[in-house]
Every structure is written in structure tokens, then in C-alpha cells.
Length: 188
Image 1 (cartoon, rainbow, N blue to C red):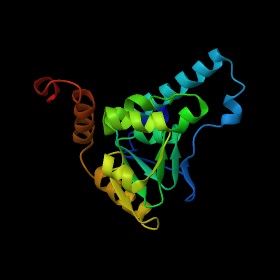
Image 2: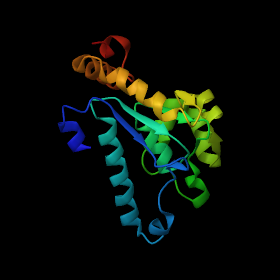
Image 3: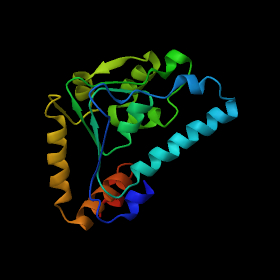
């Protein structure tokens, strides 16, 4: 992420999974089960710091979700500026089914994107939702047929990359900083 931040030739970042099965299917539970409480906390903080770094990139970041985005996968997608998904995509915060909470900031990002009650429902039930529900609740920006997802995502990325660098960075920064402020403080 730091390499991307320091490379002025990178105008937009698109993140996707390989193939159609998953964007990110979540953490490796077999690794997590052997962590001490201190190591588990360090793991969660490390994931949070990674996603904060991604979120703070001054360029647009698009999650191109082509399959499962579960647990940390949903958290990773939510740290992007917006989500384009295939009609096959599925989202969820199923950590509660393992006696855990979303550890990479999912409770906070999800409530900001879909509202407090919907975030509680998804996190407390561990439900996995299809892309039409994700679109309905505002988690996903656009849905495309699987065979068009990459092309449509790249079309949007190229459009953003063609805009003035200062304006793009200014818009992203104003929205990110101003969303929780009163209107006058958030402008400009």
C-alpha cells in the first residue's frame, strides 16, 4: 500500500480475487484457533491497520467482488471506496458463528454503510447475503453479470483515472473527512 501511495503513476486501484469463486473468503481459521488472546489481538490490530492504510490512500480504490466476500473479505471490500460485484457475489460477517466479532473494523464500517440496525442484524445472525440484498441495503454500488464485471469495473477505473489528479484527491478527501462533520465544516 505504501508503494502505491508513493507511486504517482497509479491513479486508481482495483482489488479483486483470482477466478470467480472468491474475492476473499475470510481468515484462515486453522491459523487463528492456535492464537493466544494477545496474539489474536495483535492479529486483529494488524488487519485493522492494513485496512486503515487502504482506506487512506488518496486515490480511488474499487473492490471488484467476483464471488464470496466473507468475514475479513467483506471488511476488506468495505475499506475500498466502493464495491462493484458480480451477480454471483455473496457477503457476510459470519464471525459470530465462531464466537468472534468482526476483527478488522467490520462492525464500524458496516454500520456506516448500511445503518446501525442492518449492521447489527448481519453481524448478530452471521447471515450470508446475496448480491441483490447487498445492493438493496447499500453495501454494493453496482452489480454486473460475471462475464462483464471486470470490463465494467475497468471502464469506471479508466474514467476516474482520466480526471484531474488534484480534483480526484480533493473530492475523496473532502468526502472521507467531512462525512461525520456538520455541513459547513466538511465543505472544501
